[in-house]
Image (cartoon, rainbow, N blue to C red; front, top):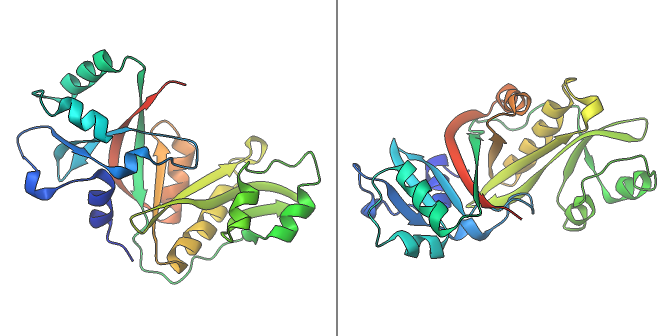
Length: 231
């Protein structure tokens, strides 16, 4: 399975030969143009690597700031807001599942195409918009179902550098019942079976989702300030 540090170094585009200890480091990364969960684009990620401030960004932003002296993260944020006034910021936490296990015990079940087609006829059923695509691609969506109704669902949404991002959604009326934990365990098993390092990225303010990650066995790895453009 992929080593977390190797994954994160590639994900951020870090060139260790260019890494400077006493300055803000800016690197370009091909992953900044790729969506997370087919929906969220973060052309800038501000974080740390071995306690060194790191800015990972698109090629065009990297070129923009190559000629500027950036003394701090706050300087960078002020400068980029002048060049790109539509930039917005949101704080995330990144977790990784590094436990050595063959399989987690879970009450979730994989949603297959036949079951999807059956329950999707019920207009009261909520499904991820991309559920059909996931199943057509022969990937797995893990669900808790009661009385032909989906309560919670999770899946490996993206694979970056042999690491799978776990996405989870529990419908509001069924939260705080442990369903999220069960479907996340199913998605983690899927990632492990494909030799992917499971990754869990969650908004800093989403305490319930953080509890799910930690209860499954994910360990905290980094705080990230993610820049995105208003639509």
